[in-house]
Image 1 (tube, rainbow, N blue to C red):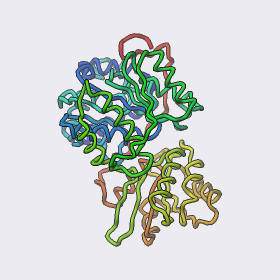
Image 2 (cartoon, rainbow, N blue to C red):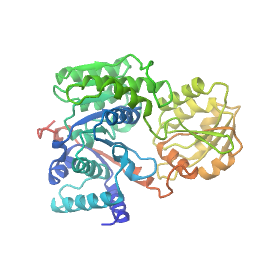
Image 3 (cartoon, rainbow, N blue to C red):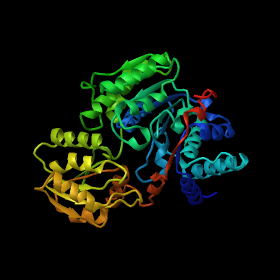
Image 4 (cartoon, rainbow, N blue to C red):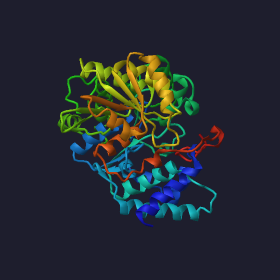
Length: 434
């Protein structure tokens, strides 16, 4: 299988949508030799900030001299972003080889277990990290936690960054309901940490830890005295969670204070308050804020970090997100607003975004654009531009700005209908019915 054929194969698995359950992933992992049993993990869930927290943890342990695997989603441009070792992206040859192995395993299972895209990629990552002899894998959940394909591992620690409203159609309509799904990554007797501050969500996480007899650390302090590479006040909370986890896990995998300090001040994570300075002095800020909580965090960052600079906003969101809430958070900060479609079947109609933005900020000049290239061209004379609304959309902007390869594989971020398996039919990582 060549790399293009591997990508085509993975595209094909998107037809199965996204199933919330562990059954398929466990069977596929078994067919690949149970690679998760020979790896150590830090499992990270949460509504927002989990990718940044994962990036900080990876940076800390790499600075400490460990060989660190990093598994995250979605990707900005290239599929290979999802699977990295010491921040080196998986090679095209390895993607092709592992995809071929996955296809063979599916065939050997006789069609009884048909994995989705994310389930297949999860097992590909596990096999790759085993082959690469990773000392530690920083392991981000995809959606939720309890029924997420990543939940077949037994980690050193389970982290939950925060609980906000997102993916309500699958995870629940209230913060406590969503928290119950996130808390599903907490394992019996294994330490759990969270920086969740919503009382209802925290009560659910605390109860889940008690039932699992898992010691729980609630991180309330911000890492204010540490130099943190990632911008924004919210990253101090993510850094505090990563710091607490690294200190807690010293007996299992050591990271001296010097490595923690070095890791936090050198963390790199694209698409999150990322500044792209142009040759003419203009500044473009890229942030994948994709739900109202993320948009509110971005709005706060604009107020605190860029005081006195009113940006032009280029916005594109997914239709299955609360784009009204996103517009309500971001539109008031902008003098001009450019609305663009996203090159995805899930993209929101920019005219609807324009209507929402006009209600949120009638004083702003609002324009509907054909695509991200058109929006960037329209905003070409603006000294300060913010691009936001979706990781997918930020990836498009990065390509247009020459910050990433134009060989886009963003379409792999799109998924079909989500199928939720009944809890009575879920197989746990220990092989028993959960």
